[in-house]
Image (cartoon, rainbow, N blue to C red; front, side):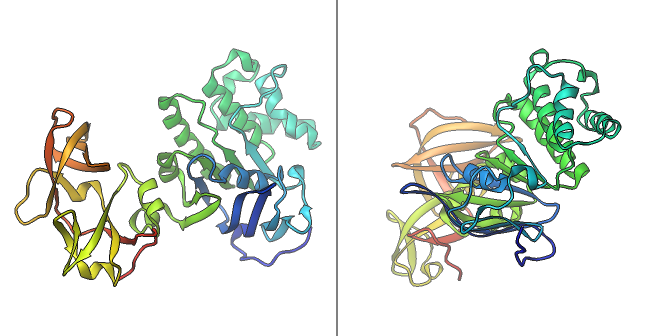
Length: 366
């Protein structure tokens, strides 16, 4: 493999990566440097290119342009294709489907990649016992996949992947087939396994809750491009595009399109913020978190009349969703709040906008 200059602390380095399928470009000029030992989550809507990117990391697809390096060594190149195949990357891949061998026991499934790698029998058996214990599935060793639950099968699939001690772990939506309660439990398990193995992990999901709870770093993908990359809290606090601002966070943030009128930024006939925030733009989008908007009239705060849509109790308060024409707005109310769908309710904007974006979606920095 050819050396690629990269930072010593980078486990994965992606440069100018492009993937085309005929006339369709699935991945567009992606550049990422992933620190060793980190847990990177690739998150975005269906069709954004995250699984294609993961398949290129795994060696299952070659890039059309650009390069991928693992620990300073080029493993894929748009010029040279797949330089190191999947078996030579010291990386393990956990699929969305568990892909267990039905005719092998749990222990046999875990031992198989070690046998293929020609591990000595004694060392192989010791390692199988270690990962069975790590995943808490010692009692399942002699069972067959058809005899265990979906959650247990997922644990076996993970155990089989980490058994060869790969330095990089790749996960392609591994929890999507599990029920809600089990998904939460397995998130904690995966984080524990990540810490225990010390491997650099790359995890694909469309679920932003998974992304924000598991990741040390997040790459938000949209239409084949990385909209923003960084630590979860940084992306939440400082989204650089309207897509990131509304895709991440629970509940999602509100974007209010306004126009400059005199010294103010107005929605309809209501002035929401001073025009100075628009930095010379005539039309901008104001970002308000749900906690920045309250149900009811507040003295001195601008308010708009909306029509009640739904309410969800959360930790002693109520998250209220209402419509202003076609605009969906999320606000918070103290205690338990309910109203008749379609009933008019006032929404007060009790804080200044959390961020301001141009009409084209880029953040305006004052």
